[in-house]
Structures are given as structure tokens and as C-alpha cells.
Image (tube, rainbow, N blue to C red):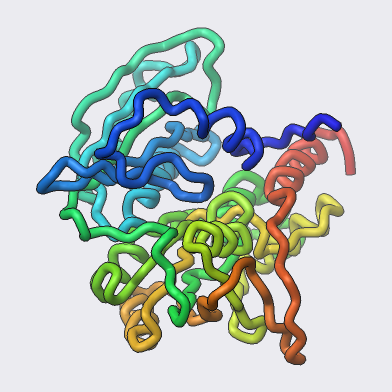
Length: 360
């Protein structure tokens, strides 16, 4: 039976059968190459190591240009920062839609420059042009690079049995942030205009740069051992990625999990509006960091994060074995499967359909 195509990243099957066997010339300097669930590569150049991340340039004009530029930069920067290394260089290819004006480009580019300055990132090279067949939100591709020493980074493959598992910000941050920004009328109708306006601020939580670089202060490998951004498939997906990459099991506890009240209200509103049930822990959540830290530094890790205004909690531990399990409030232990579908996309497109008069 032919595999059903879904929006977003290709399946593990496609990655392993099509992409992974065909990676060009083998090179021993590539310490960490392409891996499913790992967001960056590591290239050893002798006295220095490069942390290299590649992603689309993701721009949504409906967010507004300021939000669009911030989001585009932080998607890239976050995937470098989870190595524990600050992003340093940006290489960017802009393939612009024909309808994008020079004035709009100037606004977007100036804001991208400003955000890179704030993060300490230099734009080192790129390409810019307009082309037919190009449309938002994917208007090119980019590479973000960090520079460090040979042992000065962590990967999702470095979690060890005994480590504590930390979650920041709670689940569904990106889901709520995008839905609240794109469709405020749904929230106004259910909760009033004040909440709808306040919920748009969730958008600015969609970055783990501060989270990851704060935890790096514990010591890389001696304090924090692995970090991963809970993007597609959310918290459950991120936990599975770390467990599989590290060859370990992860156990989390239901009574330690948390969700921001504003995020929960947004998710509930759109689930009700579309009629689509949403498991918040399976929903895309750029900005939610999953990290493993040595147990003796877990309390300090949470203190550091909270000192930066970042909600955080120890939600479980790393064990020998494989897979992810959830200990329910009553003590029952259940297996958490890899999510088959991120609920964000069905909810997003169903909302569009209803608001355009095609359903509901």
C-alpha cells in the first residue's frame, strides 16, 4: 500500500531509503552527518568545529514583516543553539515571489539584519532574486553556522541513563502562537478581543536560543548532555528523537507536565472551532526545549531558566532501554507512541476553509 503523503518533513522511511544512502563523497571530517531528528551537522576542521544547520527561509506576510523576519531568523538560530553553541554566520538564498516589491524586500531585509545583529550573527554570503513559481512562505533556503572547539557542543545523541529531562515553556507554543496571530477572530468570538490581542504575544516565544544558551552555562556534556527543539510532532516527537538518537528510554510523569494557560485556551478554542481533537503534546512547538541534564544539576538548570523568565520543569528521567513512557497520575505506566500526524496542519487548513466560507 502506498504511503500517505503528509505536509511537512518527509517520513523516516523516505529519509532512510532515499536521502541517507546518497550523500555524495564520504568525508571523515563530518563528525555528525544527516540524521533523522537531529537538526544540525558537526564538521571537524582540526582546531575548530563547525555546527551547521540548513532550513527554508520561512516568511509569512500575514504575520506582519516584523514577526516574519524575527521568526525566519530564530528558526535557523534555534537549531544551532541546541548544540549549546551561539550562532555566528548566516548564508542566505532569497528566492522572492514576483509580487514582492522592492519596498517590502527592504523592510524584510532590514528587520532580518536587525535580528541578526541582536543575536551576534554576521550575514556572510547569499543570493537574492525574483523567480516565477515561487510563493510564500518558503522563499529560499539558508545555512546558519556556529564555531566551537572539538568537545564544545552537545547533540541529541548524548543523553545518558540517569539524566533528568527538562521541558521549557510547555507544549503547543508554535501552534498557539501562529493560530492566534493568523486567526484572532476565532479567539475574539470565544474569549473577547482583549484575550485575542494578548494571545498574539505567544508568537514571540517561538525560539529556543535563550533557553539553550542559558542551559549551556551548566557546562556542555558535564551539565547539559542533550537538547532538542520540539518542532513538528511537538513534545512527544522531541522526546522520541532524543531517545532514539541516544539509544535510551525516557520516562516522563503526567503530574510534572505543564501547559501555559493561554496556550491551552487557544488550542481548545481552535479544536472546538474546527471539530478536530488536538493533543497539545503532539502539536508543533518551536520554542519548547527538551533537554537532558546530569541529575545533580537539574535543580540549578531550572533555576537558571526561570531567572531568565523561562518557564521550566523537570518532567522525567533517562533510563536504559528504548522508547518513551508516561507515568499516569494513578501510577500506571503507558507507552507514548511516535505521533502519526501533527494536529497543527489539519486545524490550520480547516480554520482557513471555515473562515473562507467552505465549511463549519
